[in-house]
Image 1 (tube, rainbow, N blue to C red):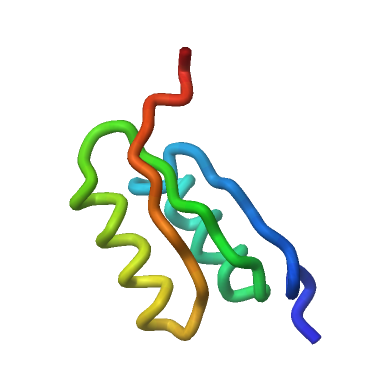
Image 2: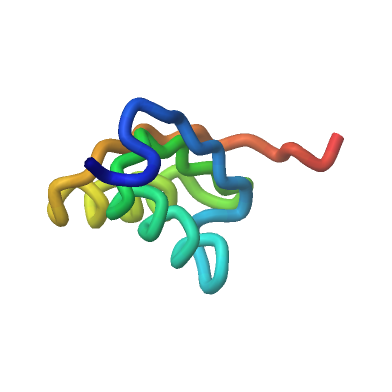
Amino acid sequence: MERFEGKVAVVTGSTRRIGKGIAKRFAREGAHVIINGSSSPEAVQKVVAEIEADGGSAIGVQADVSN
């Protein structure tokens, strides 16, 4: 059993660098991942597609969570 199977992980800033790596790791560990980025819906969907291509589960939400 994967460590985060049946869990949901919300990762803000997950379209680049560290956030993207964290989101992918959660997905590899079995979590359903919510990808968040504030800059571009295309960047959000790209990470979702990468996770799904690796067999993970993710959805994308473009939003600025700083407010």
